[in-house]
Every structure is written in C-alpha cells, then in structure tokens.
Length: 121
Image 1 (cartoon, one colour):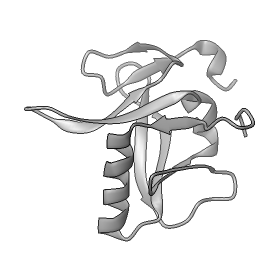
Image 2 (cartoon, one colour; image 1 turned 90 degrees about the vertical axis):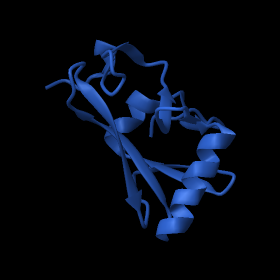
Image 3 (spheres, rainbow, N blue to C red; image 1 turned 30 degrees about the horizontal axis):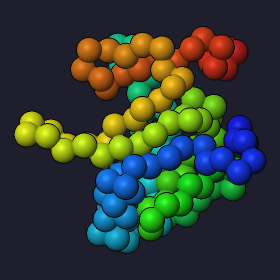
C-alpha cells in the first residue's frame, strides 16, 4: 500500500525473526500483526497481536520462518522500521527502530510521529 517496489515495509533482525517464529510455532498461529494505536503519554503505541490469517490489505513481511502482517492504517507509520528482540538482565522484548518517530516518552512505551504522517481528522 505504502511500499516501494522491491523493498520490504519493515525488516527484522535475526533475533526478532527467531523469536517471532518461536511464538508462531508455540501458539499455532500464522503470524503477528503489528500496528499502532492512540495512547500513552507521547500519543501513540505499538500493538502486536497473534493472527491466524492475513487481511486482504495487510502488508505481509516474511523472513527466516517469521511472518508479520502490518495493519493498513499502520503502514505509513511503520515503513522503514527495523524490529529487534533484545534480552537484558531486567527485561526482554521487541524493540522498534522507527525512522518516523520524532519523540518518545521516557519509558519507551509511547511514541510520537511526524505530524505530516497523521491522517487528517
């Protein structure tokens, strides 16, 4: 929908692809749908949900046995994002390196996008 021919909308690091494939296998799901929603102190939050089939307008990205579906309304916000999976002493989880983010809250759970990306109300 918002892609560039020959270029994936998002990329996954090997660790992220491994973790997504592991989650898919353990739950018997066909992939994870990623998106964004209003919320948090900076205005937007990432979402991740298990899915059993892609919607007709989803952007599907497959890599090393992992499959991500990008919800249509999130595609313009996520284009160019690298998804990683990090493990530390205190926490583990997916990290989004998104070039479209202009600000984030201190905890890193909430983000703000460039105003030109926001749909007109």
